[in-house]
Amino acid sequence: MSPAQINLLFWMGLLLTVIGVVAIFIIEVEMSDFDLYISKTILYLSGLGTLFCGWKKIEHKFPGKKD
Image (cartoon, rainbow, N blue to C red; front, side, top):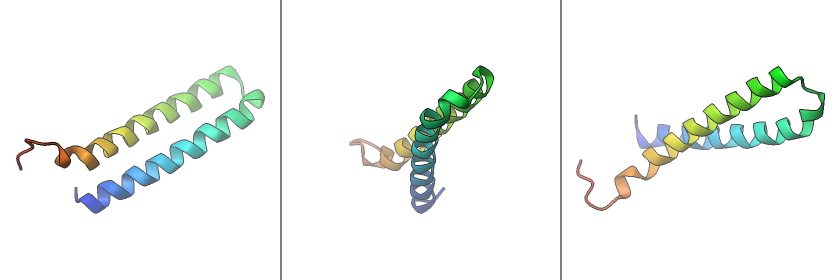
């Protein structure tokens, strides 16, 4: 993937994760346990995807990294 695509995926994932976390904590009272479990699982996975894209974003900057 090109650096521009990785950058776009990183920022989209970060924004969606932040919005999701805020939304979950606002409406947590009205959710059943199973719905809360599913929502948190989706947020954890989107957070992991964001971390992966963030790692790919900075990976080329490490010393000793050969292309």
